[in-house]
Length: 214
Image (cartoon, rainbow, N blue to C red; front, side, top):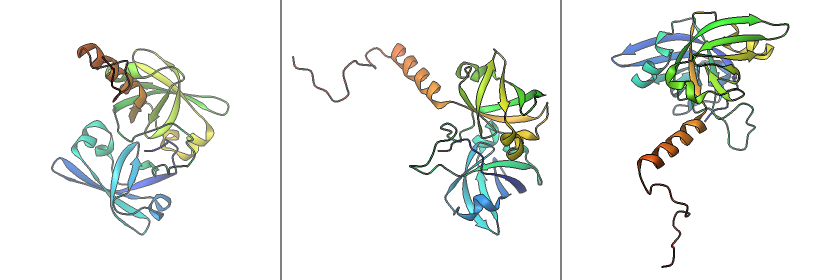
């Protein structure tokens, strides 16, 4: 589990494909410092498992599902990526709960500079539109952001100077593609309500395990 607070901008060293999977090597001294094989790292919002580590670099496997759902398969050496280590239990939750499970990709449509921040407009895939609400949270390339406005096919976010300086979103230009992860709570609520409607008796007003006397 992650928070969407980016710790470091890493750099792609190599991406080697092998059938329907790939091996991604990244340079990120801060994140690599206390990571070990088997640990999780979010790369542009996608949770990957560390395979090897050394000299400020680490290697991670990228499975077919991740390649299909995210932009990781399009990375080339020299590209910058957002890196975050998992949250520690008992630590501060500065952003929102991010699983690192990319729901889909979207296109950056426009960015309008302000005095100290920028308003960025991003396309909104039809399949994800119902989960995005004004003032709700969304992860864009692994960055926890608040939705400023939303319509049927796009949403806007505000990027403060820190986000512009410390993440790849400060460099993204209109036409470039980003990873999206919507708030997990909306998906759970939708699933529970849909299941209750389809399966009579699936939801009960009685607590699980409670026995009602005849």
